Structures are given as C-alpha cells and as structure tokens.
Amino acid sequence: MKKRLEQLRKDALAAFEKATDPASIQKLETQFLGRKAELAKLSKEMKALASAERPLVGKLINDIKKDISDIIQKKKSVSKSGTQSSVAFDHTLPGITPVVGHVHPIIQFLEKIEDIFTTMGYEVVEGPELETQEYNFDLLNVPEDHPSRDIQDTFYVDKNDKRGRPLVLRTHTSPVQIRAMKTRKPPVRLLVPGRVFRNERTDAGHESTFYQCEALVIDRGIRVTDLIGTLELFLKRLYGEDVKIRVRPHFYPFTEPSMDVDMSCLLCGGSGCVFCKQSGWIETLGAGMVHPHVLVNMKVDPKKYSGFAFGLGIDRLMMLYYGVDDIRLSYSGDLRFIEQF
Ligand SMILES: [Zn+2]
Image 1 (tube, rainbow, N blue to C red):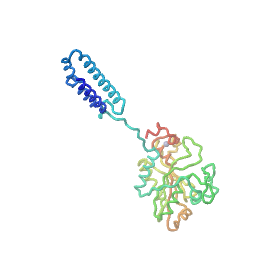
Image 2 (image 1 turned 135 degrees about the horizontal axis):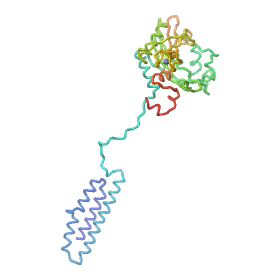
Image 3 (image 1 turned 180 degrees about the vertical axis):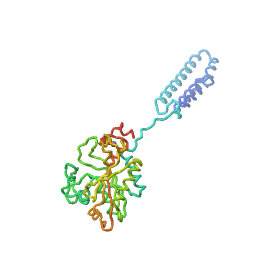
C-alpha cells in the first residue's frame, strides 16, 4: 500500500507541474483530492490494515494531501500574478478608447479652399520653405532696395546660395509660381498653399509664421474681370451667397495693375461694427494682373499671354470663418484650442 501511495504522490505532483491554466488545475484537484479520488479510496482501505501499520500509512496519506494542497496553492498564485489571469475575460465590456489626433484647424480650412479651387480646375503645387533671393525677390520684380528685403522684415539664414547671397525663409508662396512655370507651359491654373515667414512683432493679429495660399492663372486673353469674377465666386462658396466684394487700387511689384480686395463684414453684414472698424468691409486679399516682367521671367511671352495672381492670408480667413480672435492661438500648441475643431 505504501508503494501505491508513493506512486500516487509522484503522479499527482508531475501532473500539477504541467498544469498552467486555472481550469486544468481545478480539474486535477478534483482528480486527486475529490471524494472519488484514488487517495480517498486508499484512506478507506486503511481500516483493513494491521493496527501497527495504520498510523504510518495515515501519516503518509496526510503528507501526500499536504503536498498536493501546497502545489495547488503555488500554482494558483502563479497563475493569478502571471500572464494568465485567473479572472475571466469579459469581451462584452467596452474597451479603452485610444486618444486620436486630428488635422489642425488651419490645414482643415486650407483643404476647404483647395476643394473649391480644384473643382474650378486648379492644380495644387508646393515648394521649398527655404528659398534663394532670386526666387523670393529678383524674379518677382522686387527691386534690391525694396523694404521687404530688409533684415527687419525677412529672416535670412547662415547659408548662401550659388551666387553667395544668404538664403531666406520665404516671405510669400509666390516663388513656387516661378518654380512651377519652369516645367509648365500656359494655359495654367495653379494654387500654391504653404507656410511663410516674416520678421514680425507678434500680437493678436500678427505672427512671424503663417499660412498663405496663392493662385496663378495664365492663358490667352485673361482680363481683370476674370480675376474679380473668380474671387467673388470663391468667397461666396467659402462664406455664403450673401458675401459682397469690392476692389481698391494698390501696389505690388509683381502685378500690374494691382488691387486689394475687401469682403463685406461677416459679423454686421456691411452695416458697420467694431470688428470691421465701422466700415462694413474686411480687407481680405491682394491681387492683380501678372506683371509683364514676371511673365518674361517665367519664359512666357506677354504679347501672347496674360494672367492674374492673388494671395490669401489663410490664418485671417480661418479666424473669420471660425470666429477666432487671436492668431497666436493657432501656433500655441494648446490642445484646449486645437480640440475645438
Ligand atoms: Zn462689421
């Protein structure tokens, strides 16, 4: 009988050693310690033993029970603290939602603008933010002594172009138009969105980094009325059919004639308010007919072709659209602002 008991102990410990999950531990516990288990049967048979042998066998049975109980405890604690949880996994419970980001409000707004122009057949092109003075100024008819070239207005970097002049952080997206025309022939309809940089003192209305979007159209017989019609259609699609526009003469080196375009105030509808300084109008964008010098720089014959160009400050239009009153919020990285869009 002692032999049978020793074998039983060996079998039980080996079986428990292999068990890893709570279910199989439970099963083995019933198999070895249950009422119908081998050990229980042997306990009953003990009565038939000689009285001298009985205490020894009784002790052995108790030892085996203790060994089995010990290994069960050990296994249960490992399976609880280990990777295999003894807690049932309820797959119907709601999960933990991961934090998902979204597109920045400026880019969201820019995409609206791109949608409007691409439906009018415009091609979206982009270019480098670090530019040569040739592309940023020379080829755009901006003379050497123009104030926008001044170090007060423009960021220059410690790296020179091939002609030995410092590179600039582009002050507008116009150089991309010149670059794009190197590989294109009229007719063209281009939309050039991008980030630009000016050496500005920042306040609620000014930032040293902001977004611009420019357009260039070159074809035979393009006139000022095409420009004004395009801008009116664009602003109505963006802000609604009630928007009115007006144009005022202005000067830009790269267009002739040049104009500033105002839009009726969105807040007061044109009757005058604090936002529009009681004028009823909001300065919205600069535009004009492409200067013949610039056309020549684009290798386009100004006798055959004409074109228009305009530039929008995306930040200002976005602020008008969403009712944001401080341009600096867009670049602050403050999630309380960003998450509202
Ligand atoms: Zn107003």
